[in-house]
Length: 339
Image (cartoon, rainbow, N blue to C red; front, side, top):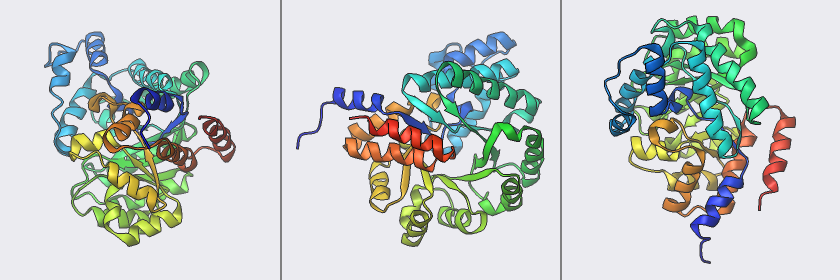
């Protein structure tokens, strides 16, 4: 059977109401916005134009990406800056028919620069409220800990968040994974669980000791979801257990193509064949130059994904999200109306 033309698939992807479960708000900071914030906050940039910023995006692994990623955040200073950061993302998401998001933010990357925790979370929360009201984009916020910082720092930031639990749905773990296993943060995540928060952790692609890290996520931390998690395919027992628990895997194809030089389309298809709840996400779309629709279209163009496969991936995202069952039912009914 001949594949549908690109225009037909692009229209189908646009029509799909989508949920995004793996997007770092700091990773949605577009070059033009970096310059406008730098001007407003009186910050001198190394680069002269937004085009020079994009030209510097030469990522070949996780550390090379993170070095640029953290440097760019310095322009974020005020509550309005964080409001704009989140609101600009929600506007782009709405334009691609993303209707529900569970975005990440990294408070330690800002408090370590002298920015108050309240400044960060209040700006984001205000944008969430406005995006729901004006754009129809619903969201629930996930606070991530930086795994290359100490467990004590993570614990301190969790306590900072106690007064803001009404703004959070879960906690996550990101940044440089090398020699920073999930077990390092076991006590912090147990405390978060006791506070009623959901748990997820990054298991980035092709990292040192990655199979051990995935195992710790399952057996020690008892996560509710795994971010990335592609390497689980190297161990049949891990795959079986992830499928048995119905855990979501938030895969980011274009990000993978930058960081590990592989879109991981075959791996995503293998996950689906094994009954694993793979989902598609944009990760850090301003840096990888691809939001949700571009990630889905990359699977179409580079790995020949079909409408049925895209529908399954999209359905998975709503099913493994942390919204209420009632809201899931509403969104899934909308999804099934797409032809």
